[in-house]
Length: 635
Image (cartoon, rainbow, N blue to C red):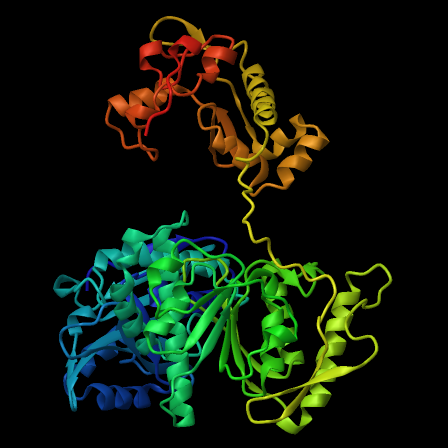
């Protein structure tokens, strides 16, 4: 065994942090090794040394030299002081690659935790048939936490490093474990904080999800090339493929539990681009999507995808008594209503929702707890709505490219169907209390104050009492025409005034300290300030106008790329000499050079406003130096 890889850590207080970090690698290796989908684990057992040897024999048979492993584990010397049933903890994990292997075998590892020696050992083996086990002795490794004077140290040991074999999937290179994994473990140990949410895909079989996701990704990847929307195609296509994969596995497990082969029906409320509906329809599930605004891509899906352009309001006009599942995929103002609509549609209706923007029943959600993150507080609110509606409520975390990826699921009811009227009264009272928070009088204004109910019928004939239209006063569906809020619609003179004010402030920081250009001239490059400090340069009316835009002041500054460079929360004057030098030196830039038809179509801000003019000669500048230099834009 060669010298181990080591990484020192200062600031860690206990070995518990080490185990928290190790558990991330054991239970969720895919967060580091992107070629993995996840793992499944057997139940771990606490054993003494003698039992440990027996367990290894039972799992691996005679395919492993137990003596070598005992020495590697430091289990060859019995320490009677620590020889308890709790010293060793043994389990097996099955590693699930993202891409299916062509060879019929499973990646498995015996995980051995030594609670006394603060080590966790990985013994990989493959099952290639009935009772056929191949132990990967060359790839046995161990992670150890050691206490040195005034600091902790993570180290990685390999049993036979000179024979290490990497396949680039389940078995990374030994150098990767040293340079990538150990620093990650160190960071996780120092952070040592428990997530507010469950681990990903905790409610469905990970292996089924991984296989189906790869199949659907391959099947629908061509949509990326023909995506007609202005949104990022890769993000939205693969995000909806992941959500569809989750639902299809979830529904498949539900059919298996109920012993039926009939595929579930659904309605996607606020379906947006409709891709999730398209995939679910294509995969055999009857259903439709509804949204207030039709998208360009809807016409590409064909007649097999059912989409409706309509404004959805929480009322008796939008109940779905024959639908199995309601879906809310980032459904904005409809999010808290989806459990209510599902509960009032029929006793058998279930729902799946991914909360995103924070809405209450009739307005923006108002924070009330500072000890939680705003996102966690909102998730708890939607869960509370679901529970009040009578659902058994579950929470899971999806694998999608979004910071808002927690889903809430209501699969069954906590009450008997005969108790529907009593539970409905509780729902109505709860909504009234929430609405009262948005009224000055503290009382509901329009939710059936007379106490009269309209009787609806579920798909099995059961009467369900629901309030008459509408369910709440003050609900506002989104506008049919999407409002542009990226500062592009602000008046030009307003934008010019803000740009000039900020630029002058930056230039004033270095008026006495200008630098010399290659031509011998002096040109003031300006200083830099935090964006939070730029706010102090603007009056209150300007700040109010920017507050209504997405991104506010920072977006405006970034939009004016010709004048400013925004990096690390600071704003700088852009020096086009540096930009031109980078292009001439063939240094890769994040921004593509403008096409020839876009050159000289806008006036050069520096030529007009900078006290030293433009630092570039007219022929080298992409912008026009005066009206005579200006050209009409060409496609």
